[in-house]
Image 1 (tube, one colour):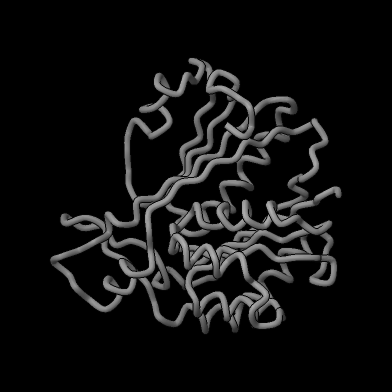
Image 2 (tube, helix red, strand yellow):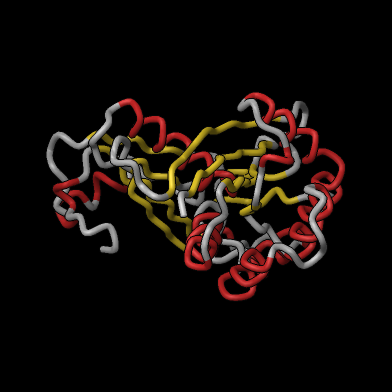
Length: 258
């Protein structure tokens, strides 16, 4: 509603979800109710987990840039509570259910209008041999969580070099970034992010607030943090980051004109 658009104004829909599988996909199931046109382009995306909000924004921005003047709707929706496994009350499952929550977020992108906030560039880093860090194990009972307790240590050790490499591909450095907007993961991950990005402890205020208010909603969480950061005012250049199964770091640079 804040975009002042109706369903019929949307040209492309990018739907990100990793907590359930539906065929036909979600945007097709709500198309009549939402008023989407019959010629709308549908791009369902599965499997990106917590990185899905940032990676989805990257995909949506490239689609918008490819067709200037069109409206690209990014929707992220996750029902993490579906992962509750009464048949498997392991420590990892109990921690995951305590940490994760349900949520959804959406954003409209449009190229060519010269808006105040623009996607400048995007990049990802996939670490080899890290499939077992985070994800789902699908079995006849449903989704079983894969969630290593060593994620904060991995972030502290490996994230800085990955982000530096991503920024180098954008012809930028850490010194060019005026502010960081991060998918928070959890309390320990937030502290690890601050350490890895050479930020003072306590810097990631919005991230801590979103975790406290909503928990980790997987892919929508980064967009919740982005919304709060936008409300408080963005600096000239921000780096939006998220980590997800793969194990993957996804980054988007945002330029904001005051």
